[in-house]
Image 1 (tube, rainbow, N blue to C red):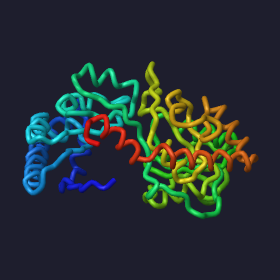
Image 2: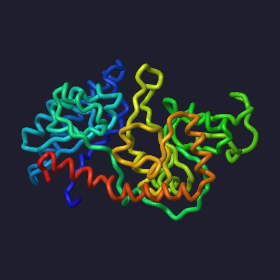
Image 3: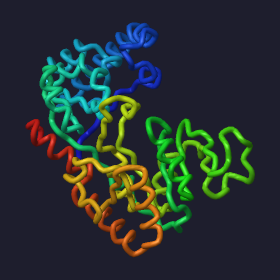
Length: 327
């Protein structure tokens, strides 16, 4: 977008392993680490600001990362401070301490805007998006019927198991995927054949970013899941628009995701992406689109065009900066 960016030079890997302030072990690590990160951050901001005035401090930080006073110090330099956070749907408590100290909080969960206001923060609704320079189609043969790339948690394994039981050839890549046996094979029973065995899912490991994007082009149907964390086990199952909802169609992949009303603001359902309501609806729609190539191709193309037109990060940030008075 033409902005000069000064990156915070600090290894935050260890910091991001201990974020839960409700966990006693995490709290101990946070108490030790947060002052160190805070001191280094304000030091680097001061140096950068002295070399050339900084207009905007843009972060994705949790309470565990920095003290609220650090954000106050940055703002005291005349720098607008903005925090982007996309786990507020079910983990808003992890930023409740620092959020009110920013000038603005970019919030992709529309239903959480009032919660930010109640904690004293200033939210701007800014939905997620994708970068077309990174997420783009590849001219590759279609190798897989149905794929999912992402971690195994929540109700995702149950959905995948249902598809296998329906005889659908589905493959998964990502953390924590167990071996899921084909129909008629008991849990824990040795699996015959190889990882290419029909209707058997093996955890395919973690793909690189580039391989993940290429996988979207290699798959007839790319799956998406809308539920958050383990909320399916509670009385309030929380759904959320996700990065993948834009990354797959931006990459030219055919996308099928669980329906939630907010998606209607960004796609024409059934024409640009396809949504399902439950496990049975998902398997029925997969079977339908696997044998209706022309319809699948029409949806795929329309979804790609819609993302290029409306769902780039450039458009999202331009709108947010304008609302902040930073245009």
